[in-house]
Amino acid sequence: MAAADRGRERLRAASLTLASAVLGLAVWVGLSRSGIDGFPGPLPVARRAGELIGDGTLFDDLLASLRRVLMGFVLGVVLAVPVGFAMGWYPVVRGLFEPWLQFFRMIPPLAIIPLAVVLMGIDETPKVFVIFLAAFLSCVVSTYQGVVSVDRTLINAARVLGAGDRTLFTDVVVPASTPFILVGMRIGLGASWATVVAAELIASQGGLGYRMQQAQLYYELPTIFVSLIVIGLTGLAMDRLLLLAERRLTGWQERR
Image 1: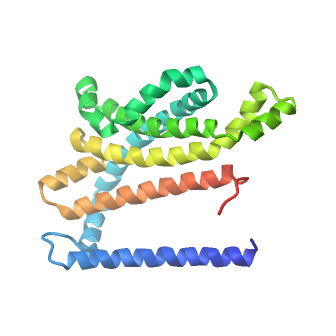
Image 2: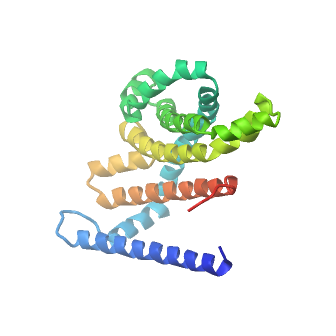
Image 3: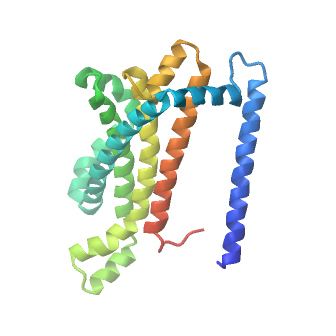
């Protein structure tokens, strides 16, 4: 694609993003003026955000939630990738792990929270554990699927050229599986954010979910809106970083 075409494509994408933001803001203003009891408009939410930023509450809550998400997410991905490769590469491992993997996939991580709180207490451990579980299940499935989806033509061609198992794995299977792994990481990241908020709603003394739970008790709807917006923007920023990494690591892949 020529530079001029790429420039027009970026301008078109930026225009659509701006139009989407304006449309969303208009819908928000319309809902706040529709007579829904207590539904705050953008200005009260912005004022409340300024108050929470001014006294440091918002940054404290954001850091607490971010710390939990990153710990659980990183642990989940680090363990899921080798397990997924082993399941895809070794039929014996696949036979042993897949029934349990499919079983636990059917159980929402949120349903594990009460059991985790009872067994692990109400400190950081159960929260990080359920986030780890959400990230692990998403990422291990995508990694496993990436390995079993490698084109057999590539594997056969490498073997014909004399590649051993180790070379075949590192030079063919790992690169071909990378797009699947990154997609799994993006899905796992979204699941991690959803899980941390739920965990903080149940048992926590800090974090964005805790702040929303407290705001609910005192009917502070602007505080709930601020927390929701921060969660969405932070999750979106982290997803964009993963998408950027995906484009850098899979530049060889044909895109539409």
